[in-house]
Length: 533
Image (cartoon, rainbow, N blue to C red):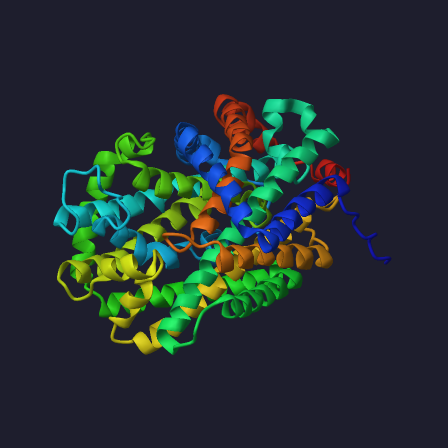
């Protein structure tokens, strides 16, 4: 049997996106202040002037996935009634979880609640309670639940669900543009429309990945310096970036069923082990009590927080935290959606949402309960002044002070460093592979994208990350990285609106037609013909 012909590059997508990414890297090397100035302006413009839009799309995503999950539409099976999943439930969940959170939960599970409770950057200036009080502790954990659970994971899930459904059940091409075909019709097949959508999506994820790697490297570097006394600067950061880049490119090149799958599983088990260990040595009763009270506080304030554009919470809390978080999740959503669709064939829509929405959200709540709850307890009882550490050393420094308080610090510190490296690597390998898929013609959900593109995009993203972390710090230590990531989110927010509208039209307004289509089965031959177009 002859080998299939090599896939050709989509030059209309590859050239402009790669040039923009390359130019950004060059500007950062030549005149980093210019790059920071430009991204800073974009940051304030998008997250201040468009906060209302970010809040609306976040809640709309939650509403769409909630409707599908609890309605008969959730019974639709991706690929037709006879389709069988290609991966086990545990493997699918591991890939979905670790491919999406990157370094986020490890970085912020300790730091974010302490920053809120200690009012480190003015986060609770608009609140009636005092920093360091019992109510500030409840608020801090509740707000962390809000930012790291059901709303953000709904953003990933709604895009992945629409891409998977339109490809496997409506026989559209495996592409982001197919997810908005219910709104724009056959226009999504036009080369110009497809190219624009793909360019926006690749730019968003490239900038988002660069920001995640930069933040991760900054955190790992501070941990290495704190624990092992190694001086951290441009040279040390370069070494760290190189190590992480080699790991995620090697995993990406080895393919979905080998490298990405195994690396994700390893990373997930490391998370489970770290949770279990802290449950053993941490203040378990306090964690549980605080989490219950915080969940009630969160529910009581859910709608006011979900529609606040900073008038209630203030800029430090809403713009720099919640709106920034939403912009990051939206930036990742299109390419994360493609990745989730690849691993979800044979699942019902309800199973898809259970794996990619409900379970990750619950994991986020548990993780912040254990890590954040422990940190809050020791801050309140005077065991450790994490707020002072963060104030002195930056927004990500509290994690290492927290770990040193634990009985098994000698084990947990290197384990956390390893978790951070693997966390970014598992996200980056899936995303660099997905970027390469978008830039290649004739790809299907089962195809592996070209190796040279995976390498090229991996290296390019790493260069931008290094430039930002080495030369773009600010008051919180990662300001330049935050600016860059927010720019990525703004590129894709309007595309995200179209995906939401398509979900409403196809699965909510047209739910009976969707159910009837699913009952009739899936024309595999037609799907193959579409894939080859």
